[in-house]
Amino acid sequence: MIKSDLKKRTRARESSNAIERLYITMRHLLNRGFYKPFGVSGNTLKQGLLTLQPEIYGDIATEKTELNGLKYVMDRLPYGIEQTRVIHLTDNEGYRNSQFTPIIPPKRRRNCYRIDKDQMNIELTRGRSDVYDILTHLTFLFIESHKIRKKAVVNSQGETGREWNALEDVVLNNKKLNKKEQEVIISYLSTLLGRTFSETKEAFEMFSEKNNKNRFFELIYWLGKLALDEAYEGKKREIKFSPRLRERLGHHVYGEIWANHIKKELKKRNLLDRPLHIISANMHSVMNSLFARKALKTDEKKLEVFKKLSQSKNEKLREKVREFALKNGMIEVKDFSGANIDVQIFDTEKIKDSDYIINANSQEDFPVLIVMDYAFGEQAFEVMDELLKPYEENNKKQHLNVQSISIMGKAGILTGKKGDIMIPNVHMFEGTADNYPFENDLSLNDFKEDNIDAYAGTMVTVLGTSLQNKDILSFFKNSTWKAIGLEMEGAHYQKAIQSASKIRGNIGKDVKVRYAYYASDNPLETGSTLASGPLGEKGVKPTYLITDKILNKIFSHYE
Image (cartoon, rainbow, N blue to C red):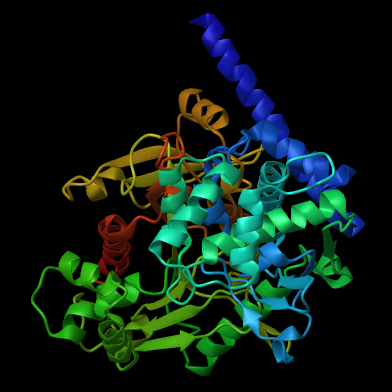
């Protein structure tokens, strides 16, 4: 038993050291301005990732191609990245006003641009976490590409085998295949990927697109092709960082523009003096909670209405709720700063029909809700720090009347299952001595009658969700930290809030703080990581329960 515990602790330390080495290397490469993925520096990243073996990347350290991890990564990288030899990471440098068509990954808000057949530019405007995130995903992609290359060749001269040649013929000639022909290529691919036929077929269907059934074939071919060119023709892949990106990173440029735009909007609408309640959430839960049943004129239970609105086929219903909200005090503030965080402002004095009763002694006392879309990692400090600063105009400062700050997010859970709720009372920042205890205005008692499992305790704010493994997460859970979950923004938000209230005096010391997370995954359970797929309807109940508790806490103050 003692030996087992020591082994686990040693492995956790090795993992922690690997994470530290990865981030030191990434910062070095950023300062340097470029690197080759399979040069000396790139190999340091590769070895760090292979030592760590993050849960989200599954079989990264084996000879088998990791298929769920590949899907996860491709959803966060621009379409066509697998065909790209030169990747140029930039700041917002004017490409939005060019003839280049932006490519936006399905699950990351980034503008990317195909410059030519060899080069892709990717805009990173959300801080260091954005840089770390993409470098980690690219390193995974390069590792997998060389696994495919090794299986494709049959001798030391780089001559390819029949399976690879058959795949190349299909992809380069854009062949339309019938079911039998598809399965022949899938069978060949199972050899190239080191996977079973059924696993390969499942991946083929997972990547299949409405207008491109052969997407999986193309992806595997180009990953292997660029690795072959790198190994046998000297065509090295490159990652470059633009000078402007390196200069601006960490300087709050986009956060300041974003926050000033919101304050100007509040000033323009005479809302700056009103009681303000900031909510970090998605762009639908507060709006739907306030207006969905009234807009759709239904007496259905709230949860059933929310489930219906979450279905992709019900775009018209969602638009109906949005139009109703815009007539009842909702103001949309689209983001053009580069922060990629949209905002909704709700002037509750103008809400005439809602599922909530909102009272105030006078027009000036009606609360104003500022709902901001999710930040990303370290960006959370930047945007919250800037938002809580006084509004400045004509050399005059006006402090914001902030009454509460509520953070609702999704997180990995260590003590339960997908769909459960976590209520933190401490945010511990991984890899540092920074810990942020706070009094959470939400508690387990708020959820005790809702037939949902909820946990309270320490949340770990990690440097990146894709850089965690079972050893280090088990340590956080089982040590005296007794961590209940992990996420990427909590410590950054709390750092900004405590700085604004207790040091700078930008907001009052009695501002209510509320944090609650719903579990999107359990990285300690095989098959329950983020790479295993989205929550779907499982996420509807906890999302709206948390939203309801936040809104009731806000409005009960004005009863």
